[in-house]
Each structure stands twice: as C-alpha cells, then as structure tokens.
Amino acid sequence: MKPNINYTLTLVLSLSLLMGCDQGFDTVNTNKVDPTSLAAPMVLNKAIINTNYLDGFGTLGMLTYNFGIVQQIITPYGSSLSGANYDQVNSSNTPLVWQNFYRNVLKQLVAVLDQTKSDPLQVNTYQAARIWKAYVFMILTDTYGDIPYFEAGQGYTTEIITPKYDAQQDIYKDLLKELDEASAGLTTAQTPIVTDILYGGDVAKWKKLGYSFMLRAAMRLTKVDPAMAETYVKKAVAGGVLQSNADNSTLRHTAIYNNYIANHLQAREKTNFYLAAPFVDYLKANNDPRLPIFAVRYVGAKGGQEQVAPRASSDPAVQIGMPMGYNDVSINTVLAQNKVVSLWDFTQVNLTTVLKLDAPEYHLTYAQTQFLLAEAAVRGWVTGAPADYYAKGIRANLEQMASYGSTIPEASIKAYLDAHPLDATKALDQINTQYWVASFLDGTEAFANFRRSGFPALKKNPYPGSEVKGDFIRRMPYPDSEIVVNSGKLNEAITRQGPNTLDTRVWWDKKL
Image 1 (spheres, rainbow, N blue to C red):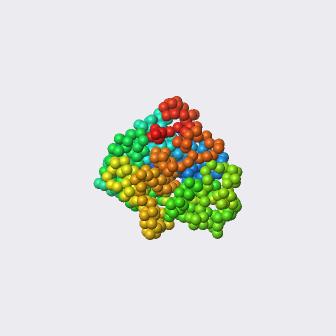
Image 2: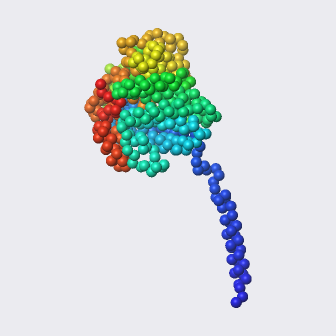
C-alpha cells in the first residue's frame, strides 16, 4: 500500500509545530514581574507596619476599649461603638488585636525568622524580628492573658493548627530571654539594611529598642516577681536603653499612608469620640502645655454639622471633657451642669496636631523609658535620683510634641517642670500618672501600665448597665472563633486563668 503523502506531511508538520511550541515554554510563561517570594527585611517591615493595624476599622478595639478604660477618649454611643464606655463586651471589637496579630503580624514574623535563622548574612534581620516578635506577644498576652505562644504561628511551617495556650508566667520568662539574646546578638559587623522602616539599619538604635522593651517587660512583673523584674531591669540598663527622642520607635505616616486612628476619626467617627473628663480635668488642673495640642472644642456646637473650623478652639480655659458613665440619651441630663449645649459641644481630640492624617504613632518612647527608670530608682533597682529620671521623662514628652508640628517653648517646659517636682511621698503616683499622659494614643501600653501600677487613681466608670463586677476592665475575652477552632486548648487556659470575662486578671495583674 502506498503511503498517503498528504497525511504524512500533515503529521510531520503538526509534530514540528508542537515541538516548536514547547521550546522555551517555561520562559515564555513565567511572570518576571510578579515575585514568588519577598526579601526578609521587607517582610519584617510589613509586620512592623501591620502592628499598627491594617485599616481604620482595626483601630476600633483601641477606640472602644483601651482609650476608654484609661479614661482618655470616650464615646456616648452604643451598638458597634460600645465597650469601655458601658463596661460591656462588644464581641466585634474585643478580638481585633488577636485577629490582626495572629493572622498577619505573627505569620509574617515567623516567616522572617524561618528564612533568616540559618543565614549568617542576615543576623541583624533575624535578631530584629525576634525583638519585634517579643513586643507583639507582649501586647497579645497583656491584652488576653494566657495565649498560644510557643506553638503559635506554625501553621505553615509545622502544620500546628490548634496550638496550646501557654501560661503568661512562662510567656514572660521567654520574652525576657528572647529580648536579652536578640539585643545582644545584633552586630555592627554587617552592612546596614537601609530599607529598615524604623531605624534605616542603625543597629545601635535597634539594640537600645530591644533593651528598652526588656525594661518595659521587666517592670510588668513588679507585683508578681520583683526579683526577676530587678534582674532584667539591671540587664536592660547595662545593655543600654533609649537615650533621646531620636531613638523613639516611630511609625511615620504621609498624606498617602495615613495614621489609621486619625483616618477613622476624621471620617465616619468624627462626631462620635470625645476626650474624657478625667483626662481633660487633670491637664487643666496642672496647667499642662500639652492640653491645647491634644484638644479642640467646637464651642456651642448643637450637632455634628456645627463642628466647623470657626467654632474650633484649643484654648485650655474652654475645654470640657465628657463625663464617664453616660450614653447618648442620658448625657443630655448633665449638659447644663457641664456648661455645654449638646454632647457635640464637649472637647475632642485635636485633628490638626496629634491626629492629623500624617501624625506619627509610637511603639516605645524615651519619655516612657525614663518614667520606668524613675520607678525602678524608687525601688532601688538602678542608680540615679528618681527625680532626675522623672524630670527627663516629662521634658522628653513635652519636646515630643514637636513631632506633631506643635513645639512647646523652652520657657513653658521649664515652668511646668518647676511647678511639678517629684514628691518622694507620692512618687509612684506621680511617675505613673505622667506615664499615662505620655502614653496618650498608645492605648495598649496605657491600659497595661494602668493595671500594673494602679495609677492614675481613676474612679470606676459609673455606667448603670456595667457588666464589670470589679473596679475596671482587666482584660479582653478570647474571640468566639477560638471556641470553634481550638476549644480544647482554650478551655485549658480558662480553667487555669479564670472565667473568660472582662473581670479576670492576667497573671502579672495580681490584686494586692
């Protein structure tokens, strides 16, 4: 049989075309501009940025709980904004720290650690990630108590998807160890990583940050393990803590990348949140030069639409904080005695200074560090006069106001320092009350130090519908999602720690 020439030619041609199409297939079909992995320093930057939340809604945990518990910012409104204002559980906002940190920040940090732990050329990135991981876990455990720690964030690496909850006591011991080792492990022998979002690769500043976080963590233990607290305070001081405002851990913002708290309060929540009376009253009573920087009042506003620039005043004499314990209806019964015409007439946070869209946010500051050293000096754990550390802390925070575009004159700083010397008989009260002011807008730290120190001496929120049986909210309850995905380990933690309520104290918050 003669072959079909046409068929044979067609078959050969088809095979040739197929072979031709296959040549270079991998090259042609590879997207050269879509990365499949990111450099570890960039992932670390992302984790640092995400620590301050991913969007404005993430800040509702801070706005509805942290700021309200320490009585600095409050809202009279309920529903999605209820929380510390009513001393009630709002299951939409109590899990926000948990969700952001476990789903985003820790996942990124664990990835960085896994990528760099065996690479001698990435020692500083590895140690910086350890420092930041310790800071993130400190916030988590301070907020919730016993949490997944040793097995946390390993879903992608070891497939642990139901991690056990660790006791806060064990967590803090390891946090201090991690901060000690990581701070000491940073080296100046390697080329600086100039893309580092915090310090541009300045290893000396990262070391000071690590030791200052160690100081903060050590001081958490003053009520439960003073011996360990003293040991690590001394280690932190020997290692070297923040020395000026230039060392502050700062998240900077721009007109494009906004401060999310500012973004939220300048938009949908603009008329809903107000400075609380205890905070305003303290600043007014002490002629504090920070008050006009923190505060603005739209004098005589009878509604949100009247909160306009011509009514705006930051004059300390006209500031009136919103009293604690009222909702948007009952607040109307105390307007006259507070000398305001409506709830919209109370003082708010100044959106042109501390909460302008490009205002910085701080993770840890020189001022906070000096106040902790002042308390440590009172306890005899460090050398130096408590009064000197105290004065340096106040000065540092007053000078920090320049970062918001509001420089306090030197004469005003000196006058305030002269009028507020440290009284040895009230030292812990004065130091930690100033820490409260210096931590304004750093809600997680203000909440933690208030519970630890017991200062300032705030009065219990008198709201009649409070769900809190004790004096103040002591922690956030675990997310409902944990009941679904990790109930066995969750129940172990509740059995050990206490009921999953706002009243239950975390380990270091021992009742004295």
